[in-house]
Amino acid sequence: MFLDASFKKKHLQNFLKNAASISSRDVKNAIFSFVKRPGPQEFLILSRSLTTSSIWISHSILRYLASLYVPSRDKKDFLPDSEDLKILNSIRQKTELPRGVTHERAFQALFHDIQFSHFNGLYQQQVPCPKIKTTLVLISGVFNEIFSTPAFARGAEYISQKSGLKRISLNVSGTKGSEHNSELIQRQLETYLSVHKDEKLWVIAFSKGGVDFLHYLQKNPHFSNEFISGVSLMACPILGTSHLNHKAFQTILKVEKLSHTRGFKLLRKRYDFLAEEFRKALSEDHQADWFKLNHSRLPKNLFYSALAFEAQWHQSHVWMMLTKLFFQSPKPNDGVVDTDRAQYPQYFDGINLGIVPGHHLIGTRSSFYNQEALLEAHLIYLNYLGKLN
Image (cartoon, rainbow, N blue to C red; front, side, top):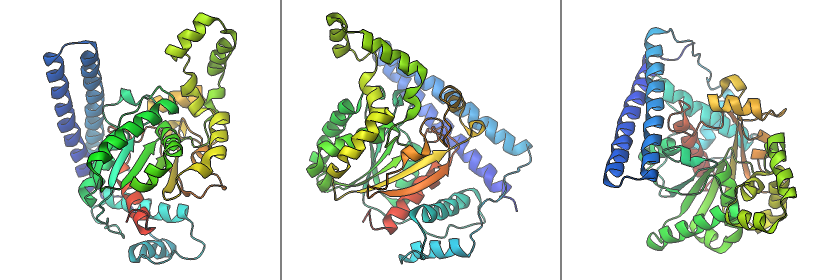
């Protein structure tokens, strides 16, 4: 049984229109800023906008043209069986899940159901999206400055329009350590909530942004308990990553061990050019130990959910293909983070939503991954659990 080809073409056509509209707006704003105040930073912003927008539009055009001239081979990969229907009915009716059904299994059934409804106009999802008064906060990860929008911004805009929730994003440095970024998070949240005192926040933190936010929570438990409902981590190295054991990073470590001169130490204190704090935040040894020592100090009134991604090298973005080639891992991973490091350990009371197909860059605005369905599944399931009320 095949997907509704005409509906898929319409979906890709709308995706192309959206890419053209948003890219045009971004480029115009970048040109206006550069003309108004010419400078190196404005030029870099303009160059980034032109590059990312052209890639997004050209990719969208190719996908749309392919849908017109190449016969679709996308098979229907979800048809609710009796167990799926029981799970979805429980979520819709807000009753207990069938005996033995885990969070992972329930989220999988919900995500697949919503995802299929987004690509097939003849199918209606089993659980409607609720109206939510929570404010969604996005936090991005490593090298987020490369991209024009925060991770999962496109999906956040979709569920914002559908559910009515507000959304904001926080600025963090993609190349700094968690100590630095947790302070940035603290200042921005305190500033925002000083004006919006009655709002409750739901944080979606991607990749290293999740590590940064966990460090923030550990340092600000009272404030967090009052204003934050919970945090959903995506592709986050909760327990660090083994990729920093790669020989390229080991070379940097050897340089550090040889650098004991006073001038070198002063230089390192002012400029973290060896990325010591950055590497510490992602190191498997350091971050796993940090979480084990500090998990009991995290705020207790919050919920904590986590989702991992897994992709084979040929299913990944071209950057992720190179990453998988360079940082080879025997474990399942998304190109950057091993799936077992992106889940909460058994000693922590977190909600593991399991592993879904996807590479590490599915949260970019130009990604064809259905991040709208992914975030909608999060919203519906967490609301079902009573976490977003």
